[in-house]
Image 1: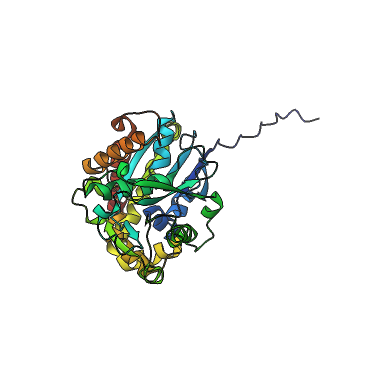
Image 2: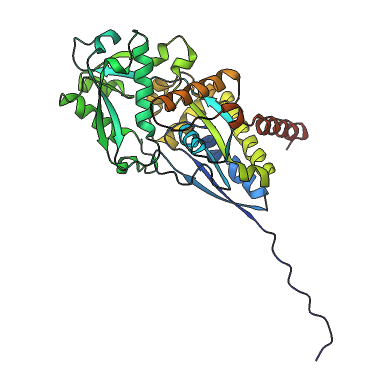
Length: 352
């Protein structure tokens, strides 16, 4: 028998398993980063992280929880904000502001102004079996509240009528508009005289077919904060555990988001085409829905965005969408975005 000492096998380096998700219902620079190959390129360069990428939409069930030990999500802010209020240890590391059209429609020709909504029935989605936060309900209620304020009214001056929907409506196939079936439910409620007004985004063709007219669009509101709703303000949220254990990974991924946002600014027509393909919404509709898509994909943590986030948090608290208050200043970590900007700048200076 040989006296040679057998060497023990070298253990493979331990990998961090990260759940990276984005929402299929709203335009994001992460959609561009994925379609342009930036994300796969970056992830391929990182040996100590294994990334599971998934598209998760509006389902009230939070999967993964925005407080999971190693998760990174780019979407609207509301699910992460709810999780934070429930004690999740997560952080906002970037925000984008996408101005859009959020109108309220009526069928009755006598309802022409916001003042005419006094005493009327306004449709409001409610999900069956919801045990977290009802995103679409919050979205509609915020639009109604901002609309009614322009005439000195509040939700106490109208009747809110539930339109109950099943979460099956939110299953999105590739290239399919997630809101198409939901719009049908609202249109039926209006046509069957169950409600007097609805808020959603209808195409001009569908408006003509239904015979509805717009009463008000919150994009016309003077104050920026009054134009904010769950779809306007979108962010990247990371679990604090991932940020502590592998901050470099988070910075590198956010740098690729920044790169995609800058690409969008230089290529607005191509951006429209790529976002259209990802959302399953025709380019003409996206143009009508959003004032400046490429600009709305830019990233920042400016004071006006943080003020809007704080105002929205107060709205969710006031209407019972969240139960516990917390400080926005302690939730947002601006240092990650600063480091991502430095990384992108250094890479460009090095020509990589």
